[in-house]
Image 1 (spheres, one colour):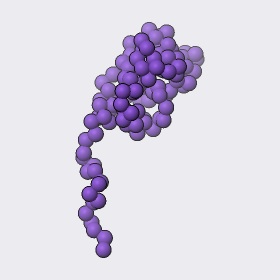
Image 2 (cartoon, one colour):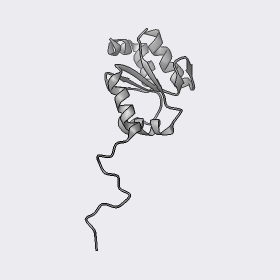
Image 3 (cartoon, helix red, strand yellow):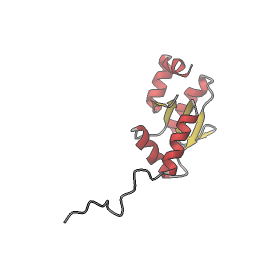
Image 4 (spheres, helix red, strand yellow):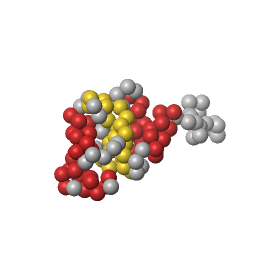
Amino acid sequence: MLSSEPAPSAAPASESNPIRDAVAEAISEHRVLLFMKGSPDAPACGFSARTVAALQALDVPFAAVDVLPDPRIRQELSAISNWPTIPQLFVAGELVGGCDIVVEMYESGELAQVLQ
């Protein structure tokens, strides 16, 4: 006989997820936000370094979140953005893209327009 009760392991829809909440809050609080490996002063991968270089070349202030201290940050970020790789650049709450897209946009001048 089937029960209409949810399985004991099912989490209620209203249950908060502190990591996801913190990621979403950071995205909404910062106009330009980069989720990256390492920090702008010490990027921990070449993709993050190239993305930081593009932003710094445009002299645009940006916030950065290091995803390395806790793997759940990356998991929750990917769940929110539907983008699997790091870095991820957000502008005004919208995902712009990862390293390749950001560098292409920088080279074409489109990134400067988006960041105005």
